[in-house]
Image (cartoon, rainbow, N blue to C red; front, side, top):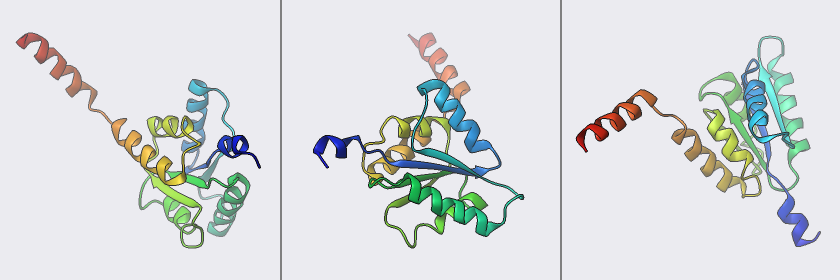
Length: 149
């Protein structure tokens, strides 16, 4: 493998959420960025047994890991999607699980997929937090600052 080929490898991404929230997030991201590769969504709902969902998670990790690892984005800490995803951590060093997925987080991750798994997780965490803004408060502060000038 040449250095150029190694640099082209991307971290795989799995979005694991209640029902179809993850699919909707991915569709929104693709609306903004265009088609995305090496990314999949797994929905957790009452139609699948726990063992089937965990099996799908493991299969997706194996399929999407091309040597850079897999970042698993889940909707909320303590929820079933996260709890099932956490089962991957004990047996695999090539997986990281991050909770609280939102569109800013997903977009940042998709734009930086050649980073290491640890770097991507740190970037995703920062982007997710920065994407949460009390818009009314920001606008009120801007208005107050203009009045003071």
